[in-house]
Length: 138
Image (cartoon, rainbow, N blue to C red; front, side, top):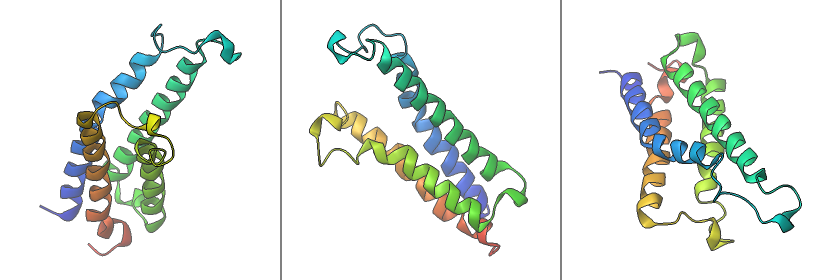
């Protein structure tokens, strides 16, 4: 098995681990418990809009990862490797980046934290395992 195929498998596994999190994001849209107080002033359902923005951005990131990893070799270059890394940082860093500043930005349980860690670590590992396919070293 080539490094690229190992990277592809890791990418699919990592993205699959994250599907529950993505599903939860979509479920927030229209959930009457996922609303803002009237005092917010921007509409009680404005949080639904942000959930939709997040979910669609997540789907776009997933599509780009799969297109680059499973597309023709012309989709894999040093530039696309960096683009994928930036997308993965943007996709996964919100899971933890705010926690040191505000504990309310943490996941609601250790189990979800562990899922987020796996969800992030596996695709990032895939990117590094597959790097030679992007640099022409394979």
